[in-house]
Image (tube, rainbow, N blue to C red):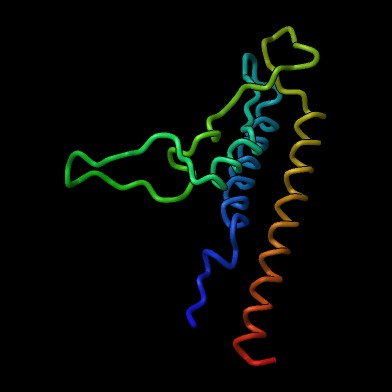
Length: 135
């Protein structure tokens, strides 16, 4: 009987990719907290993960020439992964919408969720290794 890695991990592989992308955006926000007119960005994690679970994607990309590079990765053209701008609770005078305390809280929450997903996938892998060894 063949083991399907995609079925074994389910939605968790895609969730990790999405959480990594969100961590990247949140860290960019923190790095630009003093940049005038910088707008804080984020993605709607729930809607993006829901679109993955439903199998719906956003834009389908097609190569019109043989030399075109094909996109790789699940985030390409996926609905819900577009960058959204965060509305500040207290706008600054220089036009920057980054609020470091909000970004740190979101980054910490996202990191904990990423570690939880990683731990779940690690458990799945250990379970498959135990089954392969016959333990």
